[in-house]
Length: 217
Ligand code: B16
Ligand code: MG
Image (cartoon, rainbow, N blue to C red; front, side, top):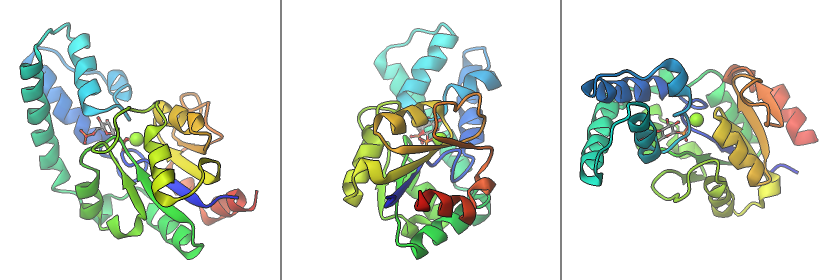
């Protein structure tokens, strides 16, 4: 019996991946290289600290912690300039309808994101009030694929993990949901998200019919 839905943020509710990509690339350019689209895929769902480590590894750059901290602040500053332009119109197709439909069915809703900017993003999108629990990068210690983010969300909602459904666009997020013993719905390519219980090619496919089928089973 499904009692809660836990949504990832970037790639499920809003496409902020393109802004992360620009901000990380500005940083990489300072060191004389650029991040490829393929490399950017590997940054999805990965924390800011871990993303920087990967990028420095790709550029074969070695820095001390103080230098890394400065870069993390710089990257986030660039990223926030884009985030400040967000509005309701940036919410991915079908998401507002799904959130409202779940509310009407009295299904609990949580956010489970690696982002430390999750709350201001939801506020910009004007959907923060629809979430019964928000678990983000500020309260999670172990990054996806560790299930901590989703287990904390279930705990905050007071729902057993087996009654939760996770909506994720990243492979690491699907793995985290599976480790938490929750049902996983992947948004994106079947080839990448093959471990998910269901894969939908985009958020517009999260129809009322699809939700009803899940709730009935
Ligand atoms: P921030 P999600 C993740 O969000 C992004 O997919 C990932 O690219 C980003 O590095 C991470 O948040 C941290 O974001 O720099 O805002 O703390 O997909 O888990 O919602
Ligand atoms: Mg994501």
